[in-house]
Length: 319
Image (cartoon, rainbow, N blue to C red):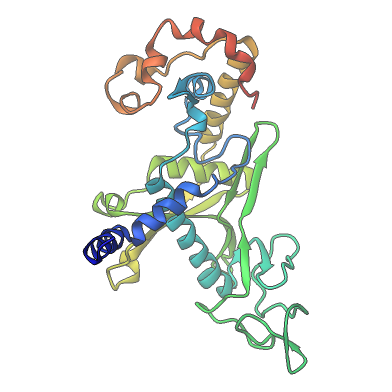
């Protein structure tokens, strides 16, 4: 091989080097996140019983719709949201002493009992290398109080919510002590939402699906008030009030009734092995709204679908 061809080959390989391409390859190999089996509060407002049955029966490119998964871009958006949640919970609200939940020592795995606020000091765990006879903690002396913005020793385990009767499972972002230390102190459900330009350019109005979701958390946790905290993903404005917005949400039992009605419709369809009826909006406007972007639109609207999937009913879950 000539020197010229070696140089040309080297240039070609260098042109292929890319951080983004490396990340894409790693994300493709990443195993899917395991989500608890059941109905999640975040999905129940938009939940369509007919879709939930069909997605377990209809195939696309040889795979069932429920097994297709999400694309890399969407997964990374979720990851950024998760990181911001953890930052606010563990760096701000935890050291402020206002967030109730279970706290876990990042060093040894020790967990607090019950619904507690974050301990004010690092856990004095006897794990790992020792310096001068004292356990080497991550970045704190166990006698130093943890300051807001500097916690690296305690991890927050989000509050589990569930209803065995209705098959609902999920996690809330915690219980916030509103007005702590005052005569008006009360526990409220906290739900953190990372918001992009669409939210802020639209006037910062809370999404109906968010109100629905936090109402289910309130129902399952036995609380009557919740706060939606919208956090700007960019935070380009210097004003704190411009990079986050809080919305107080009182409990409304109609959301619980609506969720239970949808679950009932799904369970009845599975029990009698008959597809649930189409949603009224999809029936009236099949080319707009939710129906327009539904991946199962053609199967849902086809009168032949019910007969075609009849033999597959054994694979549908009785959630």
